[in-house]
Structures are given as structure tokens and as C-alpha cells.
Image (tube, rainbow, N blue to C red; front, side):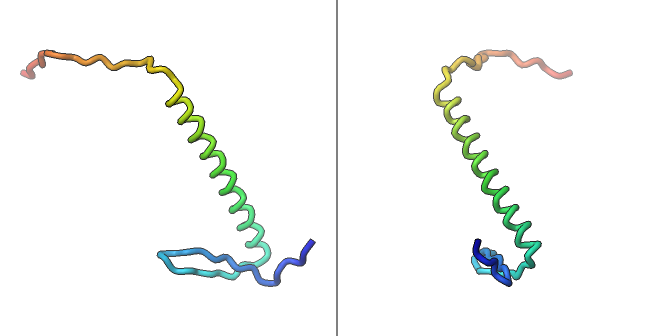
Length: 77
């Protein structure tokens, strides 16, 4: 297993500019877990999108909304 670096860096874009922050080993481990959680969440959301699209596109149109015509409005007194 490779030796971890002595200094961890977290680099990201903020308002179009690159921002770096030094992290301790403990914070680096927490950041790794947060990134893994974010990727897992993205995967779940993508699966939900695929299921939703499949249900919408492959299900028959069963519910119809009736159109009311010439429905007299009751007057308020």
C-alpha cells in the first residue's frame, strides 16, 4: 500500500476560481467518506431517474382529466 502524503490538499472551483485548502489526516479521511457518500447518492438519484422515465414512458394512459364545459358559476352574495 502506498504511503499517504504528509499534507492533503482539497481543491475545488468557487466562482470560477480554483481554491485549495490543506487538510489534516483526520479531515482528509472525513472528506474521502463525504466524497464516497456523494457518489453513492448520485448513483441512487440516477437509478431513480431511470425508473421514473421507464414508468412514465412505458405505462398506459389510464387517468384522464374530464373537461367541464358550460359550468355555470355560482354568484357570491
